[in-house]
Length: 255
Image (cartoon, rainbow, N blue to C red; front, top):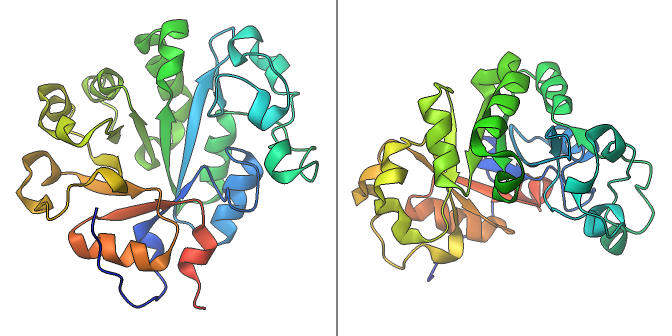
């Protein structure tokens, strides 16, 4: 996509989402990473949810433990209590610096949000867990846990049926992540009436009039993965509403 590079100036925290917490400096999807993102000024955080063998939600992106926890096992092979003793430290990227950090249950997010009443969270239910749990169980489990912070927790997924299920269940904030740009015109996407639509900024067509797309008129468009202030300003100038980034602090500070 073609962008016009604008002068580098800090972005507003209301325009930014900390992707998997403060991943630039800390292991992703951990309580540490989420708290550090908030400490850096994030008002919005995003995290991923997979499910254990006993079908309970954990804050985790991958289906295997190798990249984040240094084991070749599947998350589906262990009960949640067993997973919660595994480290979440990204050894290849960060070495042993954060080896004491553990995998977190989804309940950790509730505690973080309750301690930070100005912060909202995007909770992405990973579609790899669908075959293991089924959509209905995933939604019921996550909604039950997040109920105390329902007004500040967006349930979203790449799986449009999950997003639609969240909407039909009456969950107040629903989002979806586009697989491809033309999916904006799918009836299932429209039926979900998403409050937030996530997209890879690279698939937004050049010269696309975002305001002319029906489903975007009532949804907040969030572009990922945005790593610089200049790119962020360019996307906002095109009509994107929010930006997701691993570099939350760098996006907020003045050079």
